[in-house]
Length: 107
Image (cartoon, rainbow, N blue to C red):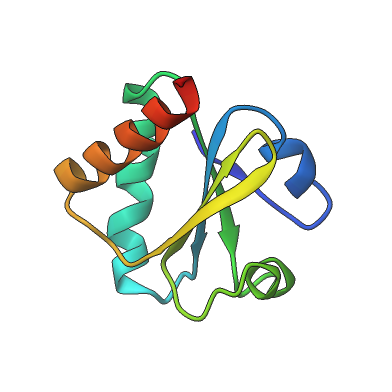
């Protein structure tokens, strides 16, 4: 189950492995589609951790990573933000993308 991220725990939650930070808002329709898919994929894909950040509660994290719209995923590998992806995708496409991210981590 994805954990809630704040400015206080961001570094701790992203420091190891492959982490997807789901930046979302409760009023965002595509966010309501993406978030449950990410939670499912976290359970299905070994080595993937998902964390969630509600922009309505704290805009500082979104600002730090240049997020202009939601949903946005910021991909971290061992503490470093390596990619940013905006928008919601079908689960199969999202799975393929995340499998590729995980494969690059394994190299």
